[in-house]
Image (cartoon, rainbow, N blue to C red):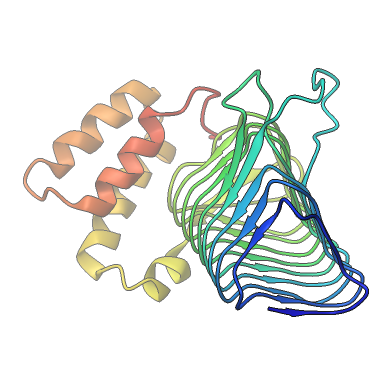
Length: 259
């Protein structure tokens, strides 16, 4: 294990021999780091936290710290991080609370740019981009392959659906369906994330079906239950998995979707 002489590592941490730890890093007890991960400098890791393989943490990122939630009384809650994530300068991630599942989780292949924030009890999927200063409040669920623009804020308990796109400086206080593009403060719908769908190799047929379902939800003046019913009827003859993702993101909404 390559460890700089100024790093402080608790003897109860569990660190793979291939991990690289740079100057002035602090690793607390109950932190587990798997192979290939790099801490460049001035990184603080608190526990209980489990970190997967080949992650990179840039300077002054603070990962697994206690939540500032006033209900938190020092309970032993967790943070779990997958593989190949990049945490840029000053990123903050807090552990969960016992009022939820005692867990904050981040999947794999995410890029969290400088000073972005993941609060307590959030669930972040795979392949997402948090641009500079993007912040999600507690209990937010972020799906997969989502871009969250710089200076964007997401209210607690909101859901962001797969392949959605959030423009810069956007304030979100309702659920965002899969594939939908939003922007502005307060947030408003500005269309479908067609560029993102194409970049993720979603077929033209699937995109066409999603566009038809999108029009049912946003252009026909239907109640949401009726729009979901018609979207399901649209998919009966196609059984398209991507259209299923769009429909499921509507059905799972508890806070209500942005329309």
